Image (cartoon, helix red, strand yellow):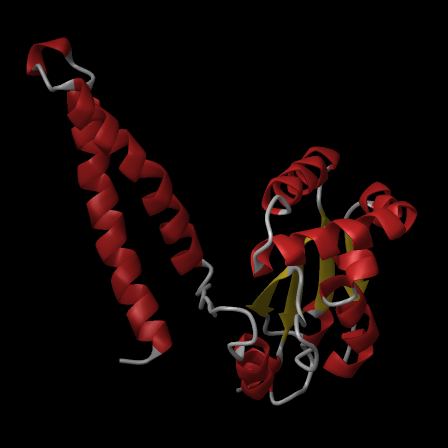
Length: 206
């Protein structure tokens, strides 16, 4: 079973499941049924993720999470997958921002999206770092270093936040290499970035 067949199969199964869920939710709201509130809540909580998953299947979208500790080789793995040394992997802490990679069919759809932190999220991050900085272990030392970097580059980091979302079209992955390193690995900018999204046809061609 290839990806298209699998996506179609699970889409149909999920549509059937959501039909049952919809009827169950309808019945749960009828007083005479006498369903417990905790069971009703469980049904309601199942609705949103199943709807989201169905939308992804309809768009033939799938997600793979690459997770691991610092320097575990996450960037190296993704670079090998893309057959291009795109994500930085050559310093002790090579990526600061979350990076999403999306597959697109047409080259005209290729783009790099930069999503900065909100002012509130940036302040929360600083508050969390200040808590972690209390101590003498490795985590505290990393937090102290991050706080010092943020203090030194406050204006630059604030500028990234104020600029807001950015969309950078590209034809080849090489075209976004500098911007990607800037917003993912350069701590003068990356501390203010929530996530970076790469939309590339390279995955579709793989």
